[in-house]
Image: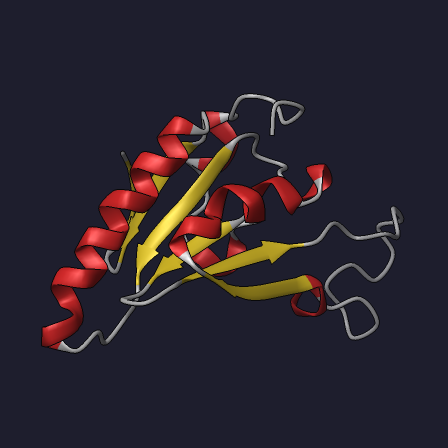
Length: 133
């Protein structure tokens, strides 16, 4: 993590949807977290970027992890998967059952504290859009 530069606020504040977000982001659920990672494109050419032969979705990995495994999971994310610097978007799971909401909220608080302890900026993403926290 220490090799990843500080976040570039001008780059990540311009992102308006999670589908365009290139850094790792987390979906917080009642019993786990989902870590979404966009791996860097191995082909440095601009030819065909995002097309049928080089779809961005093929580089996205979704990993279900325990909250306690978050530091190890983030340390395993390749350095070139952090184009905005040391910032992670965090969202609550959608359509959470009412009885699971308190657990999701607790996991959200624990996750944000862990990220803060790791020196990672939290970019809280709400259903209505992003918001820095």
